[in-house]
Image: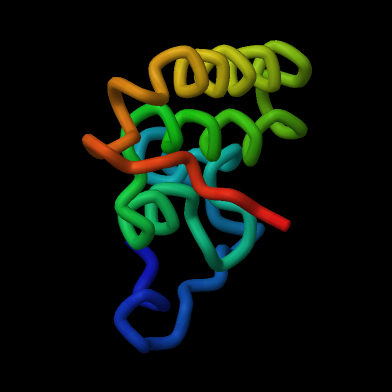
Length: 96
């Protein structure tokens, strides 16, 4: 996990050292911030986490398929919004 969340210097990947595909997959480790760190810091639910995951890696791994996967999770979130996200008696936020 990157230490930047805890106020320490971020770990900068060394391009000359082989990355472990399990603990540091290249498609999730773009620069000093890893996707999992952002997901945990923001406390994202599984659907929102998957949207972030697929959108952030699409250029390095799955291309349009990853964008379709992200869209599927957004569709699920919209379809189930009232059940999963809206609190009882709460109106949908209005934006100007």
